[in-house]
Length: 193
Image (cartoon, rainbow, N blue to C red):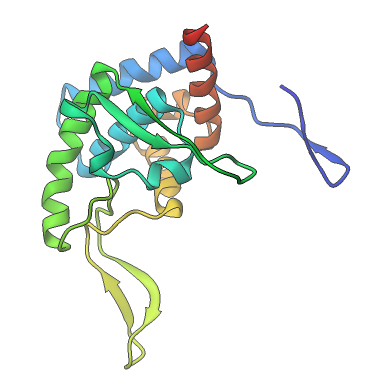
């Protein structure tokens, strides 16, 4: 893998998982869907399935809305945002049976969360109360209810925590979501060739 050049120095890119590891990950996610899952595991399973199909960047994932899902979750519309900036381009990505099933399960959980938070069309929402870093007039932290749109840091944190928490993921998922994205992108290119 070529190193990244920054300020005259080289930083080697972390290795991305191989195709066999991505297949094993898809099988593990399918096993999860066959049993009981917590809301956090349900969200992570759907997120990982979407990532395997779309190879979306974390910023692209957090921008997804329920309106970006095709009929019966058969496709997802991803607004591509190039890393160096510039004009992005959107594309519809066909989803796998795994992703359709994972999204269906997540959307059921999401619906209850969003109703309590007075609605949002963002696909990925928080599961627990959180603060937004702002103080009210009395100096108290403003609390956000579950069901609020997940920010990029929250999405990345849920990936890191889930990687360690759920059986089988630590061996299959790289440390960073970006490494998984690069592997999924390489698989998309290979499949298209």
